[in-house]
Length: 213
Image (cartoon, rainbow, N blue to C red; front, side):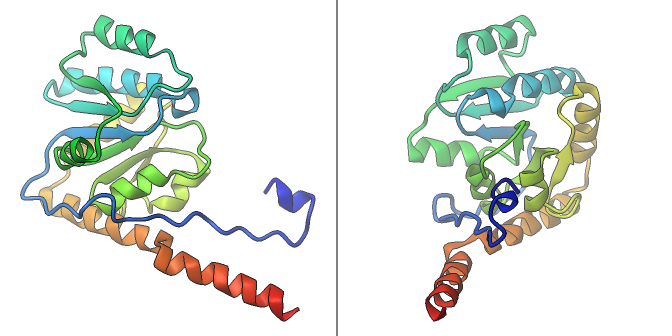
């Protein structure tokens, strides 16, 4: 959108993602654990996640959110203090960076990945987690609307409103196991268009088109 205003012959080639990072998880049951994976930066809107989970945990005190990633330009101590002041120390955990083994173990503990980002350059970590079978619950921004089809391969929420977003998440948690299984499978399928196997062909076709001229 930005560069097409300057140059008419602008083509978008989206990122390709290596989906070998996380194995596909075969779930016997679905739990109430969530994971956020990524940098702790201001555009990731972690504070809105905390506010939503504050409301959510009043309804279901068993819910857990693992916030995984290094501090970037957020005030981690301030976020941790907010969690403590809201009495959410047993619900929200800041793990920092994890080894690949630790990360895989954490992913396997979770059913949902959750992102309240205000904007994203792309969102590779979301697709990686979806490819493992996690159900995505994402903020209403253009990138994320491209990743999921609402109620089919994931959910789009407005995280600027903690009450409405928590109410919708309660509805998601209350879905029958069979529906969650279908959404999990659809999320995995939805990521396949971003695989290197598919995306590399787009690059090849573009090079061939340019070379031919």
